[in-house]
Length: 542
Ligand SMILES: Nc1nc2c(c(=O)[nH]1)N[C@H]1C(S)=C(S)[C@@H](COP(=O)(O)O)O[C@H]1N2
Ligand SMILES: [Mo]
Image (cartoon, rainbow, N blue to C red; front, side, top):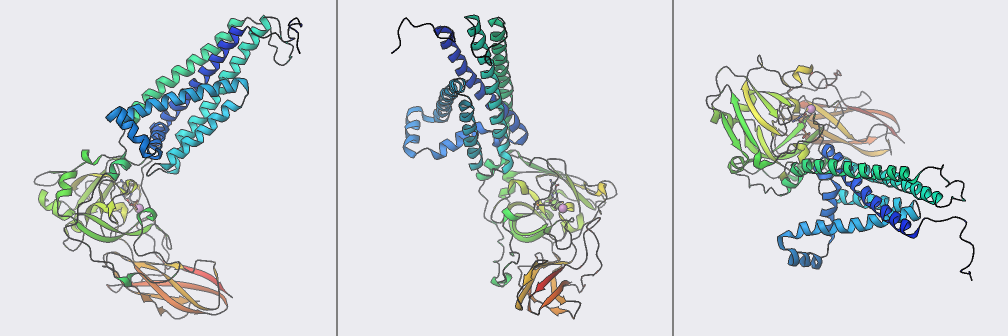
């Protein structure tokens, strides 16, 4: 039992009123740290992309996770203002939680910071659950979490010093570590208030500025979700079952969009609102044409499967894919504009400034399905593959033909204008070369003696592959079995059923095109117009 008359405690505490106000300041520090989280995350999201804003992501995740009953209550109570009400509710909740975290940090560091770390992890999860979120999209939430923790630590540290200073003023501290140099309270107080004010003001100013930018930014992924593709006027013929060989490890005939290689110069993927998209066809034409998204959707669209590859694809490389495209033949648009005699090239431009120069003769050829494409494998183009509109030209490398996020076609002359990669040392014209690739077995593999399928793909889009041959250890060329294809515009799978004998073996492949050319042995690197040479692997058979 302690006597009421006992000596005063050795460490005199600040007055009760002082303590209480200090606790309020701790709560305020928590809320300022929240503002710092939101402000810095929002600022980083300006660079990373509006969809990565944790504010919106967390709101979206809450909506998705809320039980239907809760949703109904919100709609009943607030009607169409339910989203605004949700944000107010979330805001109040966050203020209460972070204020408590501030008080906790002051009472028991670093538990307040732990609350922020936990909240940061939840925010990162929320961002990750959003449709089309990439790994990179977690950066704003992660940066915001670190900033909030640092701000909270700094503010509570200053609050401690203020507390300690007022403590020493009212009698001096016993604890040598806590004992501050004899200074007047107002200095510690001013330091805390100044930093709190600056952190709060900076968060609000930077945060609301950034939010304004992010709010007006186009979220192409969301717009893509709401696109309904029209039925093709000319549907593609069904893929014959014979196009896919039953061999483990072989590349699938149709490349799923998610696995399709991506090559472009875009630092951040262009975000285009289809409703605001239009294509200008200009230059050496009789009548310039402007085509809007709706006008494009209303045209009789064509489905066409084609293999697209990159000039940078080295022998054996994987910068190639085969997809079903939906679009409108570019030749029809050129007809509409009326191309003038002197022209020999179409310079297509992307919204981000990338350009490709495509031979006019290819685009006008009635036997080439050069498309202004809006669909890939039955869905709107993925944002990173050109949403809403790109070009696809069978038989030409991507860099001279496959402009993504395309907004302009200018009919011109090779002599007058240079495209993006042509000014950087790559050939002006880029027909795809005859090539073949061994998918399985992989190089360096160990396989068992006996039946070993050697298989892969071969291509020369638009010309077509006639034959594929395999040879072991420079022996005689053996003809491989060739799979079907829907047309000469796609690659073909092949397999050679090898009876493997013990030892180390070198396997090589070569293709022959439908116009009778045999793939050449001599290796040429990708620059300046595509790699050449036979793919080969070495395996150990035991
Ligand atoms: N806007 C734009 N379109 C572009 C490019 C680019 O850098 N920017 N790169 C081209 C190149 S080099 C290739 S190989 C193809 C690749 O298309 P993909 O990313 O859909 O596979 O896009 C072409 N279209
Ligand atoms: Mo490319």
